[in-house]
Length: 170
Image (cartoon, rainbow, N blue to C red):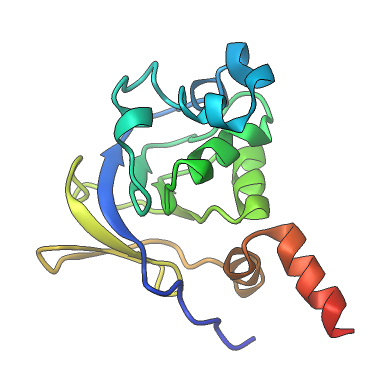
């Protein structure tokens, strides 16, 4: 497969650091599940960083430790992050269901073992096809490459838009 062009323009924003074992209940608190995505997203990760839902901007990147997205299989957790404009989540590992849910809705999630250079609040640009994040000072941090077939889903905006595009080609 020929690599798809990267997101244009590549998303730039602030880095938000989180720790280990960030669970889906923190991203999509149960008490707001019945209120719709706008309300749910307005409470995303507020129990870990109260300023996050009000201060996150489109293009911002989440950087976390291991087991990001653990807990219940709520696809609303990934939806809340995407709704807030998060351009990618970089973590040393992901819970399997969260990883798949994120890819299915078009939210890039990359395994990135070397995140020490990615300081909270730093400005950076995310490059999906290069599987890296570039800091404003010129440093680059590489992540594990996303397989071609998953990159195609991400470039299409998720599984449903990808399938619709494929069906329209037939």
